[in-house]
Length: 204
Image (cartoon, rainbow, N blue to C red; front, side, top):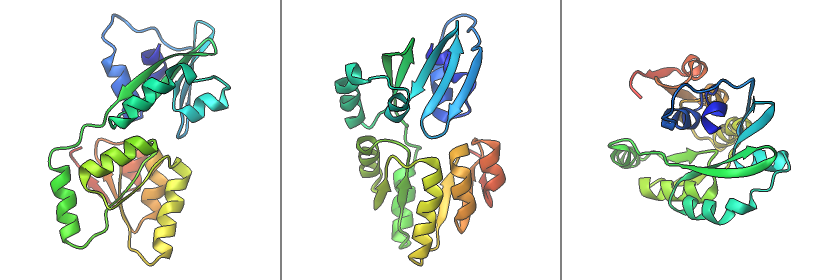
């Protein structure tokens, strides 16, 4: 069900879920809708599938309590948890983990040696963001940031007199890339992010 719902999405997490599905031919969803910063909904066999974060399930008035304990434990392991809903109830949770790129730590250490302040802005929850920021040696992180708020956050940093370079790869990052003084888009990202960046990294 998760793969059916995520098939239509360009989001990196969605692509991972779709790729993880190993069965025969996957049925197509009748409808698909991406809900910015929250997840997706799709219609299959006249029932709705929802997959996304807690906010999405709050909006749909579906209780995620049955998976609360499991999701908190997974988040403390720096994993992102998305809930899966079907027929108006939560039926599962999927944990995903960003694998750090080789030399990510070294790159951040090098930037800090150059006296650059390195921040992470993520839509991810507080626990996951904190674990990853710590692992990477980040100065600061902002968690649970909705797409429209990424742009505002960049603006706030600029108002403090900072010159901001931003690296991003998704649809959600395009407004923030445009707002920053220097937008750096990852080549494997979405077309809209690539269109908005001044520097495009060819490899992901």
